[in-house]
Image (tube, rainbow, N blue to C red; front, side, top):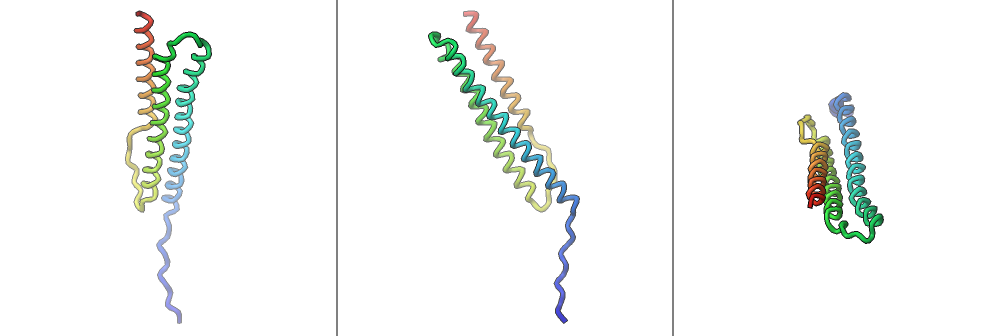
Length: 132
């Protein structure tokens, strides 16, 4: 008679489905941040290019437009990098044997605050330069 090996422990189907759901949500979040980051970068590049093309003789594009464009491009690149790091951390957490949800800081909220601050500073700078 052949000795039987012990049967493997039954899988928790509900936990597996929850893990898969969280994995897909993390993928959607990453794709959303890629889209948003590319939009910020595109707006930064487009803003300078359009204003330079509309007024080739005016040199104001060297000042606030150039700075604002660089800030938008930098914010887009930073957001993209942070989204990649956040996604990798989430994938590592999902692969752990005991996945426990822990609330974390919101990358979307941080990016929104960055865009808001950039906009306020740019319009403040624009208002101050218009007064001079």
